[in-house]
Length: 109
Length: 120
Image (cartoon, rainbow over all chains, first blue to last red; front, side, top):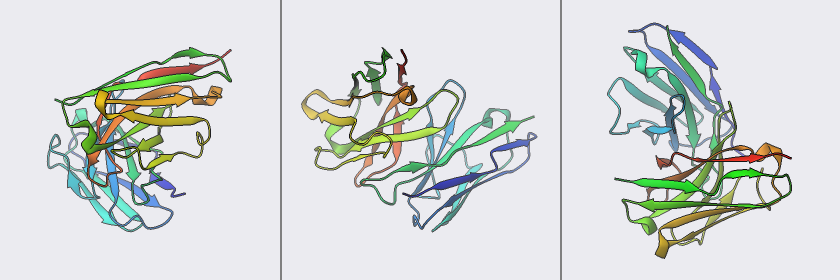
């Protein structure tokens, strides 16, 4: 089973700051990694796929990088509406296995 | 517009069964794998099960293997999750999720979810 470890658990930043979120896999997932954004009371939304491709709904302030076991989601010029929990997810071994990280909560003060 | 509408959730006693359904529209259903993802109250996301376009490939999380069965009916544009031997730890919001086109394994469109509560 691939375990994804996200850090930090919580990130408290100010508008205009840059957020750097980490996702580490217990073994290589190549670039088969996605990121999701979930706001309170809402379903998650696909944000980044294949490690670095941004979904069409999201602005260029969001970017993903990494391969193998180490991945980063960067949110530049933070805005209040970026407050959310961000999850990474791997599909390298689908089928039959898929797994999520535990999430990073981004708070904008 | 993609629409995924879950139904079938509710309150059920431990050990009992429940069947979730997902009605899909706005896309070619049999072009995509489909999944169930759940979220326990106040917790993170957990992939539960997935099924490829024709039902020939299926996967389950270890936590539900042997108790849950995923299926689909492409003629009805519908996805199902038969849940048996339910446990309190199965209490969660269950999302129906559409995969990308092709080999898949990530989650491009989500329903609003249906709530399952397992309690005596």
